[in-house]
Image 1: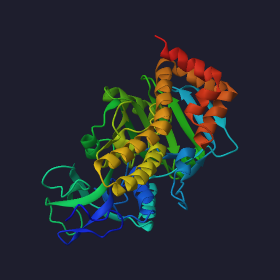
Image 2 (image 1 turned 30 degrees about the vertical axis):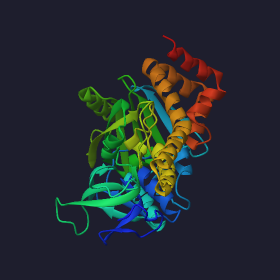
Image 3 (image 1 turned 90 degrees about the vertical axis):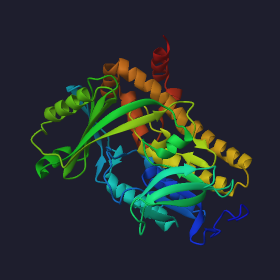
Length: 416
């Protein structure tokens, strides 16, 4: 194989069988499917690899806020299980108060349906999808890499591949979207500075109970620093979970058990109980290495305070897909590096700024959860700001820029 083979839509092959893909995306969650879609709509050869068979369960509340909705592929129909018009807030089970809105605040989905729909959209845009494929490693140098414009993606599994046998897929650019324990992230050198443990149960409930929860979520500010719990209704089931800093899993489990008991849901048997670590990137964490980009959870991109990740996955995935196409077109390392830096700039200028505000909000929440609860339940401008953020009318960064009270509160956190 020659280093002079064209990059886009070339049909170039290795050993006469395997094409050299313009873009290979690893991981078919919201970030990966979004990246694959963004790259495929340009007409490039795109391969999307996923280790699980689809659809598959993911630990996730399933809240779709405005920024998530706005980042969906054109024409994508959200498989909403409920539309939220009310939020019940409590402070570790106390001072419970419900706030309502005439307009929908956000929607609720089940991740298996949502993710499968995004993969279908990527496939319809032209991406090839392979499931049951595990990526062992990526190589950008060495005997397994035919030229400087090519990345070798070493995989096991997939249709017709003997169990345990390694194969190599070649690409002009690779996007790592393989979750919070990302192998591609390890290759890039992603650095993390916040790790949290989320525990969640899917609880089937009778129609009479489901009716009480329809259109309303519950958010409880928890007993552990930075912790909170949630109840998201999904028709005939409730998604109930809690999250807190990793380090005391026993205390987090007790919080979940107490939360479920206070809600009167202890008598119902969960259909699924699961746990998941969320990881936020450090400010100086890289987003690329050579011709490899990372996005979504693989890059540690999520909102540090709420740990909301779907909107970050969709937005960073779309950016990664767009810039991966440019990297695939780069004919030398200097140009590839320039495009990778442009991708990092785009992420940091948008999502990075929001993450910075989220870190400050988390610090305030860890110190004064009661203050936040009082503001949201008793101070109308705070509730309106919350509603605006969930609908996508403004971001946390916009809130701080435009509201002097919020700015002063966060400035107080920054002072020693």
